[in-house]
Image (cartoon, rainbow, N blue to C red):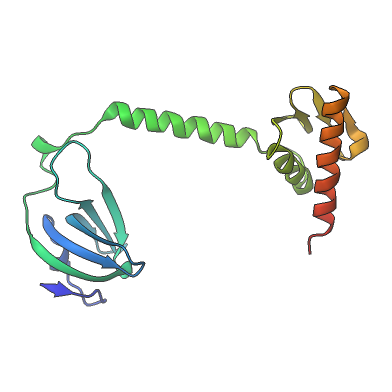
Length: 180
């Protein structure tokens, strides 16, 4: 059975366990086994490849991105409990890493500061280690930039560090003023 996706595709086209060869509208080509098909959301869940083993790639694919597909055959139930393997440690490690990254990202967002102040912080962070201390930007744990974030509001640190922060601050302010 070969086909291209249309609104008239029946649920039987995507029966659990079917092996399909799929070409997407984005140019991807892959083989996969149907795990499930959700008609309301039009999402097909596939297990890529046919290699047995503990590691498997799962792909969620909106069916309107399927250019064409062909039926390769029927296989056993991909959700057979006796053959499923979940690496809980790997999942916990990925969750912990994602949480740490989210916390780090959240610390980079100033609370109670203007969009301009956040832009200055982001520009400084590209070349220098920075963090927020309430509404002040702390650069290299020694130089502080306070509101309104002008070169004359830069205090502390070595003269070289102070000058570097002032220079980056001046360049960023100039860049912000020339934006359309």
